Length: 217
Image 1 (spheres, rainbow, N blue to C red):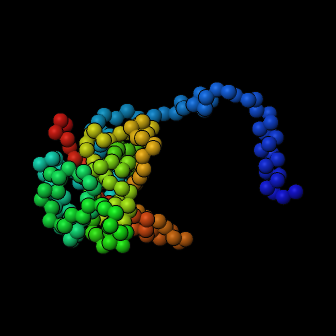
Image 2: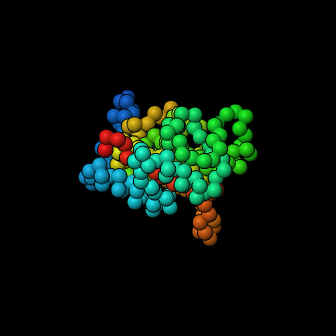
Image 3: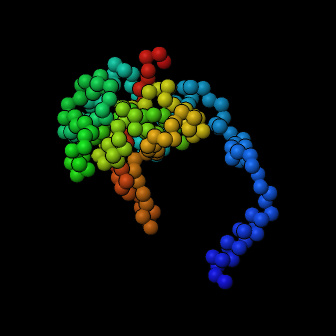
């Protein structure tokens, strides 16, 4: 008898003693875990997001609507990007002061061509404070997933506090699981066998996050 057969045999014997349960899965599996850790106000939640984003080596900026076009212009100029990728419905006022040539995602825009583009600017669907995670869902201000995986520099604008939640469970309540979700915690990075960190392997080497204060806050 192989090791595989022994393991499967033990699984069968264990399951044989479990009585059938016709209740719905969501009733059988408990969901009584904490939805968030601690009690934080809106301002504290935003500060926690900024702290955890920085912990993951994202560069965090803060702005209001009036300053945003000039901030984006400075970030793109500092990067030296001559071209930038733009989702189909990114608010036009965000880039009203930007200098780089704007390329919109089209079928004719191949991955090889996109690889020569310096930066991409997007919005986001939700930002999770406890994990320092940005979630993109392919909405018109974010575009297709490839826009944020190929360029080496990603600027993501988060509307504060409307798009900020404390925890992953709270984020899941806002997200549509049928959409193409991309979860981003800092720049793309990996470690080799000697634990040397290498950035820019599976996505942008540099992630800059702009916390945009909305007019009502």
